[in-house]
Image (cartoon, rainbow, N blue to C red; front, side):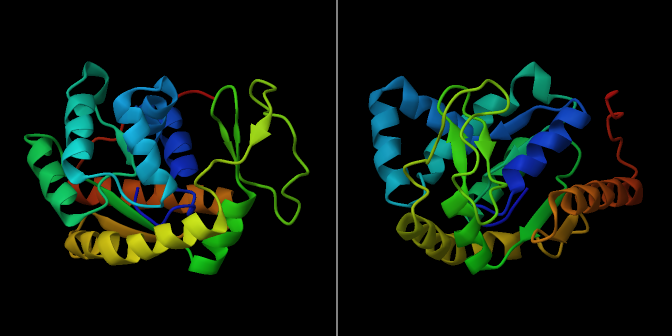
Length: 223
């Protein structure tokens, strides 16, 4: 799942992974867990993320290498937030080994819509769940629907940081998308639609690629 910060790829990746019984691998989640641990690495990562910058390639590649080696990722997985640069994409190709080819989906959303969305995003202070459907009333929801925890603004969700992250995205991540775009497994989606429409288009894209390449998609889990 590729796209600018705030495009909704994390939410869509989580739903898709849950419906098909696959692990969702989010480098952002892994790094935030490290930051919350208070470790030296976590403090260094926090400083980088709060400036709106990207964490170094070698650290991220190492995290993904370790995660993909776990047994639950053998049948398949959903990647969110990785790769973000051409070196990361090249490294991921190497990590895939004898696995099926990657299905790469880019969610496209205009910058101004991204800024609006991210400014209204809140996360649960207890379980870390993200809530973004605030519309024009960002303070209308006070508690997490999962656990009842209070909702707070992430330190990196200010407009200044978001615009810096978008600059970094266009400078460093866009070339990586060009790296993928000519592959038969690459698809683009309109991420500015309602979440249900994006979800439908995402599933249709994945199944179309899988059918064309004779890939096996895990069965949908019962609701």
